[in-house]
Length: 174
Image (tube, rainbow, N blue to C red):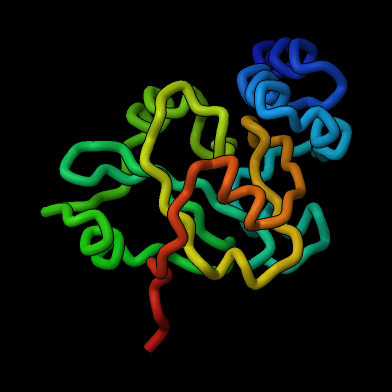
């Protein structure tokens, strides 16, 4: 853990969550979520690493992915076992071109680094698409603003707090 990570964790209290995320949780009246945040000794930058650390199914991880739709950032919430079909995102948004956002755009838009982007509590307001596959579970786990922290939440509640629209943007296997 870097000195910045340690400082951020201390600022967020015992939860280990990123301070901006912890503040957003409090503003949303979700203070009871902070004690449920799980902190890992090693980074869990991928959905597979987070699922292994939690001992849950890969699909119970909620990935928060930033894409650029005609250059405008959009957040897509996707279950950890699936991939986003950018053509479906493009059609959903009526965009000409959709690409994965570069790391700089992710940090500029959300205030978080890739691997720790939470579904809400971002620096800027962004359109949010949430894949319906998240609703297949009673609880999903999402990043709490760092690659070391995750939190549990009912998918419908998570999508509501993220301001998401339920869509079908999961890549279908052949």
